[in-house]
Image 1 (cartoon, rainbow, N blue to C red):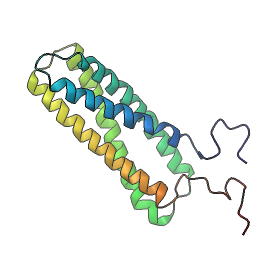
Image 2 (image 1 turned 180 degrees about the vertical axis):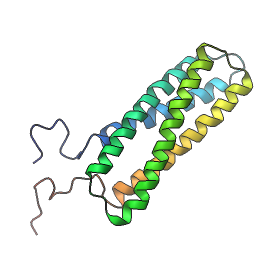
Image 3 (image 1 turned 90 degrees about the vertical axis):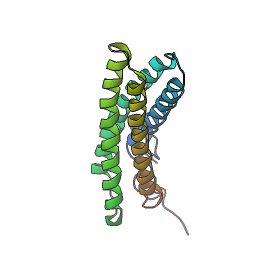
Length: 164
């Protein structure tokens, strides 16, 4: 049985698995809104929505990134998983800071200086690369959990043990 005073569920060894999915979904929705916005001839009403989603998603990515660094310093990581962990951290760093920078620029071009069509398409290319970086981060995170068992509370960790 888990710690009765902990606000985390017993299956979550730390907060990272609870916060990591929100920026993935939010930033994917931002890119989708951006694609739909860029496909219109006139300035789309989706543009402010995409900008807001980028800002919220970048903020959530920062939280997920820092919670991941904390998790990696408190979890036991098998030696064979270290390369995967480092790749996961590198892609997460790249995706997070790309979107933090991109959200800042996006805020500027959305509300201060209206973008030209070429700037909108250029920004979309950057956002698509950011989404690729998130996909690579996710792939390595998936490997850490499902191949190496990193961050997964085992029965013995939870005090249940097995009786065979």
